[in-house]
Length: 318
Image (cartoon, rainbow, N blue to C red; front, side):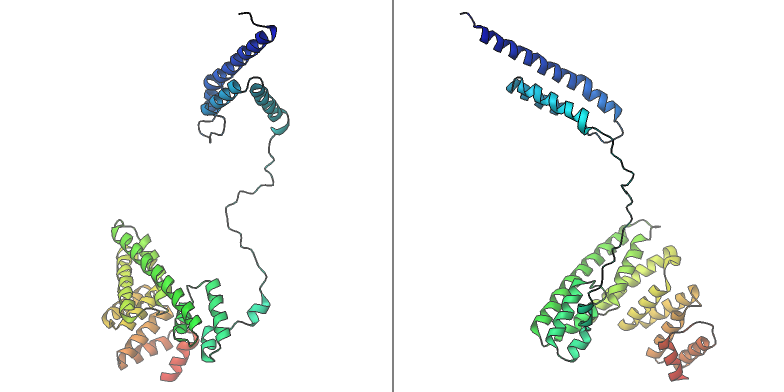
């Protein structure tokens, strides 16, 4: 059987296409890829890999002439037009956060009233608006106000309050137990989990949104974390944490522990106002008249700057 001239040309074209594709595959697998990998051992590898060259080889076999021409033209365009150095002078890679200043919504702010005021006047519209504003903002410091809305006559507002409190308190319980478990498993000298647990509990327990039994249980967990931190590194305990723990223990009626922490507070921070106010509240609660007035006189004779509440107390008992 004799082949025609066109058939000879066709088979010659297939043979040349096969040679070109095989040469491309060989150069890619055994020359280009190893060289590029060697140059970029420490950097992220973004070049064509062996799989890419194999796929292109198959395309060249299935699409004779068109495949090789396509890859050649695209590579030529990349080298002549699209390959250029990017000017990064105006690009900023700073990871610091940028706080965007948003203009206040004056109309909405003028119509906002506290939850307590809305409850006092039984204003359903204002109460619902207050609840929605709390939901949109940071609710961590507003839980005590939300708890007041549980007894609201408006069922929708009460439902909002119950949903918010349920979610936030469950989240608090989970996080506290997680931090508490990690605190017990950490190494002897580490104090990170104690600090994290105390700071986290301090924000919520001060608002008294739990029932008494659960509030007291969390207060003693906080006291346990403070005890561990005091043994490991007492310098990390702030006067505010001392005061907060004393108030939580005072609320639970554990007066012996309150006195112990008041003494530690006095030893570590003798010139802080909370050193005196914690002792005054303790002695007033246990009705220790002599110790109360002794502490009050010591505060009056000190150089500590007092706040308005303490000044009012001094005027009352002087």
